[in-house]
Image (cartoon, rainbow, N blue to C red):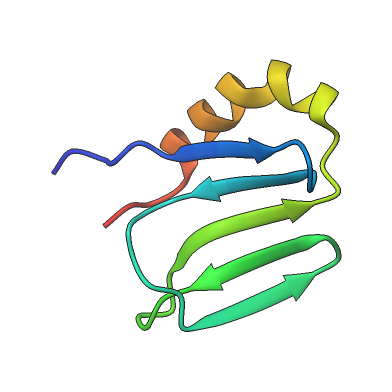
Length: 76
């Protein structure tokens, strides 16, 4: 099965970095510091939001984040 690409976006106004790992509806969330993990009904992480993320740090890390996610995160 082909892995779906991780969707990475950054909202400059609110300084939120979002990583959508897979399609799915969030039924629960876990908060740790400035990071929120959205969990689906199967207990799997579907989205990660990082608040107060520095925009200048985002651009050079975008490809690295995507590459890391594809190598280390399991997709269904």
